[in-house]
Image 1 (cartoon, rainbow, N blue to C red):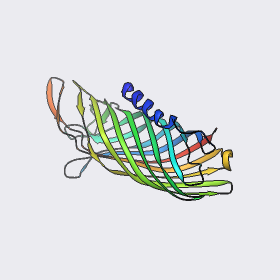
Image 2 (cartoon, rainbow, N blue to C red):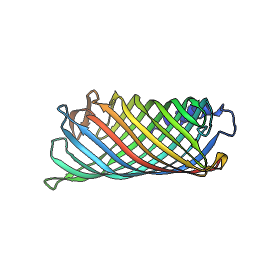
Image 3 (cartoon, rainbow, N blue to C red):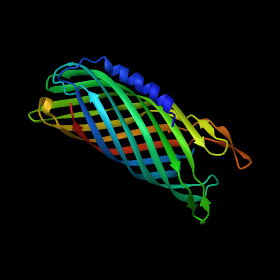
Length: 271
């Protein structure tokens, strides 16, 4: 994975929150999550080329001031590592149906900022900047005719922005937060580690995200939280590039791609 890129962006995002004044609204937590993952690719006519489905798991941490009960500035940063093995149902370059397993391991870091309107109940307006980097490793599989379909690795780096609205309410002993909005890739990079290798840039398209978070406790005594969330990416087809493999040269593209994730996240607060 492109660790130098991730490290540079991580330090930048950490710097965005390092200037935040420490007060009673700040909170920090560690998180564990499980998600239902789906990745699909489509041809020019809208026909599905492949689908990957399965469970992935994540661990992470977050720091923010979403505990505040009055109007004012919002800020936060969160990060997570995710991994899992999913089922691949697709086809070879020659169009022969094939199946395989695909393993994922990735890192996502996101910085948020916004403003809260209301006291104990009200509206949030927020934006975010994040980086998502993952390894997609397609294992060797089998075609419908029983022959071996050889796998390969792909490395993705996505810089994205978010804009959204939230509704919050603080009650005695618990609170909840609803969020939703639009997510937009700002830059994309895909390295295909096959033959001579090739660098592709999937096209930029908007997608949606949503989150509902429940926290239990009172004031600084919040200790546990649970969230249900939806996240997604939409990529249009990349420009074609030349790739050499097995003595032959091919013109390759990353097809139009959709990613959808439905997740459950558990949090434990230590601040």
